[in-house]
Length: 474
Image (tube, rainbow, N blue to C red; front, side, top):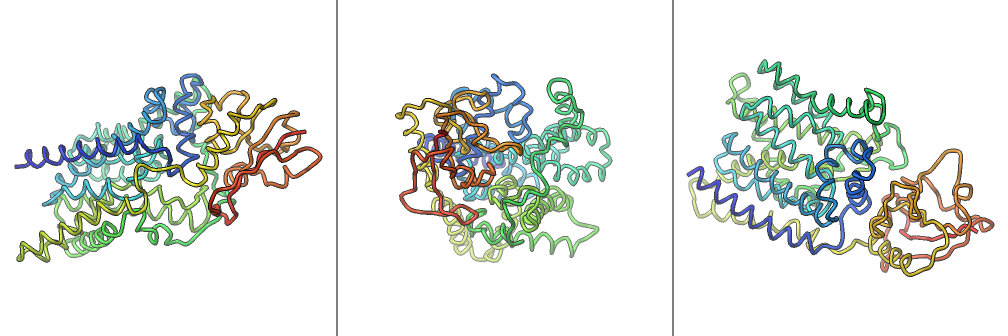
C-alpha cells in the first residue's frame, strides 16, 4: 500500500510539474525582477568570469548548479527551478511519511500551492534551491544517513546566507545522538569554499565572513512591524495552510507539554528538525525587519525557503482537524475536499500563471526597446539589471552597457563621458544605487532625454511614484 501511495503521489507531482513548467515557459514577467535577472546573469556569465563562482551575493552553490543550464537562457534556468521545487515537495511528502503522518499527500499541495512558493517557481531565485537542499538533507538525517545529510546540509549557506543561522541549531541534533564524525561534515561546505576563495581569488581564508554582502547597519531599506511576515500570511502560506500551520504548532507543542520526557521518537524528531528551525527562521527575519538590520527589506519571499517545513507542520494541524470528523466519514471527506480545493486556488488569486511583466518590468521593457531603436553615441549606465538582461549584455565587463555602482569619491558627472547616458529609476537608483535624482538634475552637466512612466501610477516601497528618466551627459 505504501508503494502504491508513493506511485500515485509521484504521478500527480509529475503531471503537475509538466503543467506548471509549460506555464512558466509561457510567462514573460518575473515576481522578483531585479534579483532574479541578476542571479541568472551571474550564473550565465560565470564561465566567462570564473570569480563569479565565488560571488557571495550570487551564492556560490546556486551559481555552480545553475551555470550550465543558464547557457541555454533564462527560460531553462526557470525550468530547473521548477523541477527543484517539485523535488522539494516530493521529499517533503517522504519526510512526512517517515515522521508517521497518517495521511502525507496533502503536504505536496501545501508546498507547491503556497502562493509565495508557487510564484518563485517562475524565477531564478535562490529560495527554491534552499528549500530543496534543506528538506533533502533533513530527510537523510531522519533516515539516519548522517554523513550524507550533513554533507549536503553543509552547502546550505552557499545557497542562502541564512544557512549559517540554521546549521548550528540543527547540529545540536547530531551532538544529542553522539554522531560526532557526521557532525564534523557539517563544516565541509564552508571549508571547501573557504579554500577555493583563498587559493583562487580572495587570498583570505575567512573571505566567507569578511565578504558578507549583508551589512548589519544598512538603513535605507527602513524597518517595519515585528508581525509583518505573519500578517501577510494570505500571500505567503495562503489562508487555509496558515490556519493548518497554526493548528499544527498548537498540536505539537501541546503534545510536547503533555509528554515531555517520553515523547514519541518521531514527534521529538519533528519538533527538533522541522518545527523549531522553521520558527527560528521566521523569528530571525521578523527581528531583522523590525530592527531594520542585515539589509532586510521585509521581503516575504524568504519564507519560501522553509516552505516544506511549514507544510509538514501544517499537515499535522490538518490531520488533527480532520480527526474531529473521524466518526462521520462524509463530513471528513467534505472537509478534506474543501481544504485541498482552497489550497489549490490560493496561488492563482495572487499570481496567475502565465505571469505577465509587472508594472515596473513593463516600463523597463519599453526602455529597452527605446535603447534598441535609438542611436547611442556613448556608453549606457543603468541601475536596474533588467537593462543588461534584455540586451543580453555582459554586465561584468567595462562594456558599452554597464551597471552604475556608487563611489564615495565621485558622482555621475565625474565618472561619465560626454554623450554617455544613464537610466535612473525610482527603485534601484534611489536605493541600492544610492544616487538621488538631484545628482542628475544639474542642467550644466546633464540633459533629460526621455521619461517613462507606468500606465497606472504606483509607488515603490519607500513611498515614491515609480518613474524612469534617461539623462545624457553633455
